[in-house]
Length: 392
Image 1 (tube, helix red, strand yellow):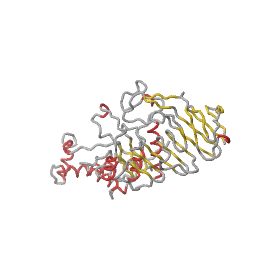
Image 2: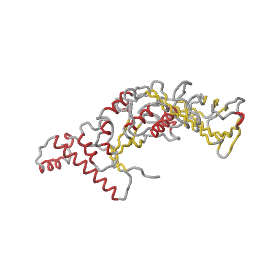
Image 3: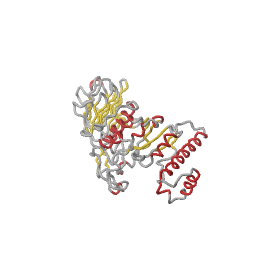
Image 4: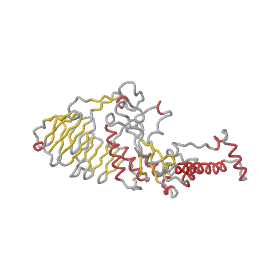
């Protein structure tokens, strides 16, 4: 393991002028004001708070550097609209020694009644155009991050999620927004481990097996993030609908696609005329549902990797949701049933890979068992969840 960044504090809070008057810190402020011949006002307090924040960040920065740490040091700027009433704080952050600032991103978190865990709601088909538009355009949302003083800092996202949302498009839209803001790393909150994922639901739930549609969108978002240059243009007019040469995501179709000369990924069934189309020379496929390359009606993610004359296929079990994913009664009874027994026909249409020239094996541990291919020009076989090897 390795440490990439040091973040000084997670989601720091700052007393307002009204709040500080009821704390033991108030006499310190009064003493500071008296020394500078300033009145006891909110404007004076903002000057004091600015200086305190700047001094604290720089003191912590120096302390970390004194240990010999060489990694970039981060100050956490919390969520959207945090800057409201705290402009002095953000000015201090911009002036500080830290090389990096961080923020989070949770579309949907401010929609539900508080507390949200008692008022859950499925937001999968909520249209988040206005959220992404305001995030990009409004300075008191996230636009402060590209002010001239903050352009001197690198940006990271310390947390993000699609809140009570299991769609197949929102992660890639977030990824493009992040890159438009200059974000260099983005860490998701949180992943559900395989053993308990079938028992989990609620506001934050991502699992390769239990939320395959959403997981495929997350994998696509990773490719979008890595392939999109920093400070790229972002279309606030249509932030949840995009088609380019290699990226497609759509709220309307609840679908995202990533397509290059070597990679083809999709988060749901792809109509034959949907763009971006698969290219020649594909070496990696990840999908949920059928596409122009694969015909498969199972309810689990599958991945295909091609190297020379060998192809590996990994098929995840069918995911059947027994309860709404957005409720919060997890870790008691199963929420998702993973079906390892149902057989589906898996059909691959890829140039150079015909059934007459190939042998198919099911791989279980160190054992390989040959599986018959159907008598067609294409790779077609009866598939159970698991791992397969095709040798040409």
